[in-house]
Amino acid sequence: MISPAFRSNDRAFTLLHGDCIELLSQFNFHFDMIFADPPYFLSNDGISVQSGKIVSVNKGDWDRFCTPKEMQEFNYRWIGLCREKLKENGTIWISGTYHNIFSVANCLNELGYKILNVITWAKTNPPPNISCRYFTYSTEFIIWARKSIKCPHRYNYELMKRLNDGKQMTDVWRMPAIAPWEKSCGKHPTQKPLALLVRVLLASTCKNAWVLDPFAGSSTTGIAANLIGRRYLGIEKEHSFINMGIERRKEIDYTQRYNEYRARIKDIACLEVDDAWSVVREEQMNIDLPF
Image (cartoon, rainbow, N blue to C red; front, side, top):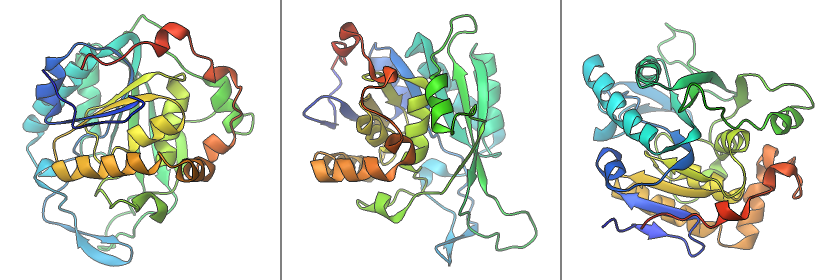
């Protein structure tokens, strides 16, 4: 029997401690959407720049450089397990750089997903390239794919258009990396900004939807989900990151902090409470995790 490492009082935020490849096969539940920020396998003893200081690129053993074959086998296993956990009309978003994103795309195609878009996250505040022998690395990619080639997926087109000043939203999103206020409980080495996850969730889910993150990290996906009324299950094998996610979730139990975070995220600030996207079927609200 699976025992959560943490569950919020409203049952909208649950964390499991362990390896996603082991845990995903131990329960039967289907999610509306999955966001995954898997290892990019960049920890190769190199150096980079962070806040004007030279730092090591090593993030932990979980990100240690591996061979292309090992990366492909790893990605195929967890992406295949995630497909089994999606509803028939569910979608998955997977982030990466050129180091891992081609492997991810190949696995998605081999496993029967339909790739919908490749979002380019263009960072407005990238760190400089200290070698001065390459263009500055300023982008990451997020592949958006649906489980079934034939079954239509959810895309909140009108909402995305309204958030983009009445024009169709493109697949290039210009956003900064995480801000200091997002590091109040510590900093995960690959932490994504809340604004990025909020947009992903608003684009492809409705209120009270269930969202899975198999590489939870500091639980940015879960915080974003709860800020806009979605429910979350995160899986994380590093104990220190589990604790960080718990502390971040406890922060938004305070109404003042909850409202402050919502006000700082442009896409949320543009929304109105009674928008059609927030309408929820009663039967969907009654669905809960099996543990």
